[in-house]
Amino acid sequence: KNEVEQSPQNLTAQEGEFITINCSYSVGISALHWLQQHPGGGIVSLFMLSSGKKKHGRLIATINIQEKHSSLHITASHPRDSAVYICAVRRPGNQFYFGTGTSLTVIP
Amino acid sequence: SQTIHQWPATLVQPVGSPLSLECTVEGTSNPNLYWYRQAAGRGLQLLFYSVGIGQISSEVPQNLSASRPQDRQFILSSKKLLLSDSGFYLCAWTDGASYEQYFGPGTRLTVT
Image (cartoon, rainbow over all chains, first blue to last red; front, side):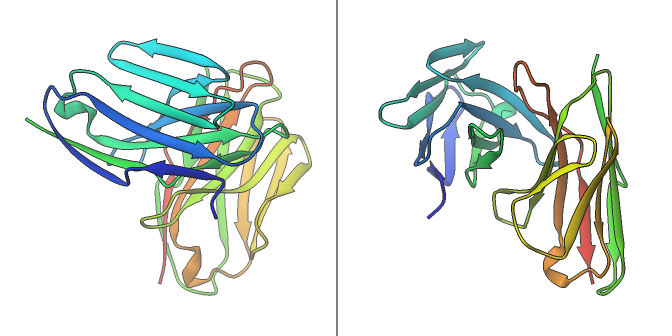
C-alpha cells in the first residue's frame, strides 16, 4: 500500500466548474505539499501545508492532520489548469513521498 | 534567485551502458538535494537524498548510485543500465528553513 493515496486518478471538467482533488496519507508527516506537473514534465510547487488552509488565486488547499487528509480545490476552472496534480508528504527525516497524481483536463 | 539545472534533457542509452546525470543548484548554499524517478504512468519515486557533501541516503535498492562531490552538485550514476531504468528523472532541492521543494526540468531517459 502506498503511503500517499490520491483520488480521483483522472478528472475531466467543464470550464468554470469547481474541482476537488483528495489526498490521504498513512504516515506521520512534517508537512504536505501540492505540486502541479505540466505535459512537458516540469513540476512546480503550489502549496506547502502543515495545518489549516491556504489560498492562492483560484486554488485552495486544506489539511486535516487528525484525519490524515488533504484536499486541493480549484474554483472557476480553466483549460490552462489542465495538468497532473500531485500530493506529496514530507516525513520528519525530510524524505518526500508522492501520490500517483490526478490528471485533470478542463474542457472549454 | 535560486535556479536548478539538469542535463541532459533527453537521453537514449543501450542496456548495459553507463549513466551519469548531473544536477546543479545556483543561488543557495547547503541545500537538501533529491533524485526522483517517474516511470511511465506512475508516481514520483524517491531514489536518493542528500543533506550535505558526501552524505547520501538511498531509498530504493537498485543499480543506481548518487554522489554529491560539491555543495550544490548532485550526480546520479549507473555502471550498467537496465531496461527498467527508463523513466523521467527529476532533481529537486529544499532549503533547511522552509522545505519548499523546487524541481529541475528533468531528464527523460530511454534504455533500449
